[in-house]
Image 1 (cartoon, rainbow, N blue to C red):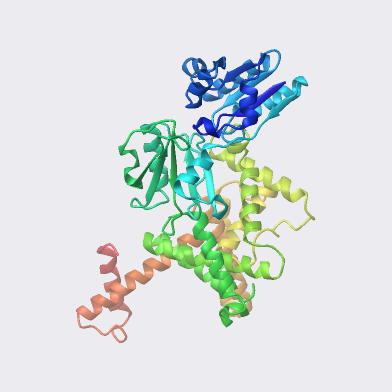
Image 2: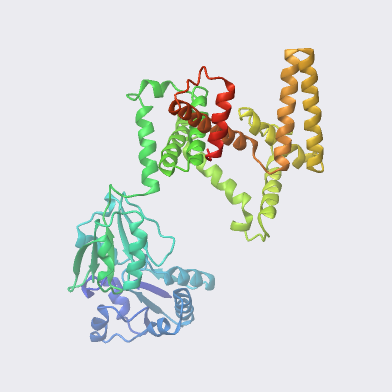
Amino acid sequence: MINVIGLGPGDPGLISRQAWALLTKPDVTVVLRTGRHPAVTELQAAGVRFLTYDDYYATENEFARVYQRIAESVLALPGEVVYAVPGSPFVAETTVPLIKRGAEAQGRPIRILPAVSSIEAVCGELGLDPTYGVAIEDVARASFCVHPKWGLLLTQVADRLTASHLKLKLLEVYPPEHIVSVVRAAGQSSVSRRDVALAEIDHGEFTHEDTFYVPPCSKAHHLGTAMETFVALMDALQGEHGCPWDREQTHMSLRPFLIEEAYEVLEAIENNDFDELSEELGDLLLQVVFHAHIASREHRFDLVDCIDAISRKLIRRHPHVFSGVQVNGTEEVLANWQRIKQSERAKLTPRGLFDGIPKGLPALAQAYKLQHKAKQQVGFDWPSIEGAWRKLSEELDELVAAMARKNQEEITNEMGDVLFSLVNVSRFLNVEPETALRQASRRFGDRFDQVLRLAQAAGVDAKTCGLETLDKLWDETKRKGF
């Protein structure tokens, strides 16, 4: 039989009667995970003979190896064993599940007794009721999460270096003046508490007896909290007593706003204005959340479904990041992406070759994607740019012929063919045509504004001065770098 017991947070009086009876039971082997516990003196005074695993901590470089060796040693002990850990066996004790799994594999009986942990003692010292929201994290786990809406108890802050790393991580979320508490020796007569600003937490020394407490913070800079607040705001706007306009919107009625906000994001990027970009991305996010909220009201899907879907897709399509697949460069990454994408679509109802290209795309972007997909899927493309140039020249000749016949419908069709062929040329030149035209339009606007300013400075009326004068001002503007 293996008995796993807890020695409590420190005060020997907090050891349960059942645990004490096992510790003092004759003919049992008593082993302590560590002899660095206040109750050890009491055990020695009671004549309890025991072994400790403190030497493992000194000879191993990794905690994982220490815990594995302890578990293997406990499982190898014959007869009835009492394995004692600080605090509770159920709280922050990596060795206990290892021993439990090993005992079950051996068919050996094991009993784990509950005990008071240091968490209860810390909560008592801080006056916390954990049922009102307290998260407990071990800072030794690099992936531990921060929950600014709850109180946060952090264990294993055993030295100043760990405290410094912890401070940097917490300052990403909490303001530097946020007051945190350090409780030392909770559950012992020597218990102490230190309250200090977060920015100063690493100014003192630390021991294995220290536990950090970070109170809830309404000023935290935290993605999860911000998104929850945002979604709650949408709930209010579209709720029974919310905004009539918001409540009336549908997926179709919001379409123009989605396109408009996307283009305003593009404009901010082109302006290299990061304050504007931050604001416009927020406006675009509003559209995403708005559509998800409407779908949720209709019991179709919600924002969590959207996030889960894109997360799964990113993991599937990045096996070189998440599944150990080896790739050499961007080209192999893109090739893998397309293979995975095609495999996903093969499981769906068969569709046309171009069904995945949104029909609401701007015309140039749509043409670019159509040509790219025709090449990618079935190899329909010129072998070189010379073919694309010849086709563009051919389409220009056909446009001129249509103009000579003065057939407007024919002219419109031929102009479309010219533009489509020009997109093909841009593809061979690795130029995204939508972006190129937007930049050209922007340059035209900036230059013509400068032309008007030059005309005004020269006392020239731009409306009546004629093309020749405006053209000279245009050339002057270009020489000046506009």
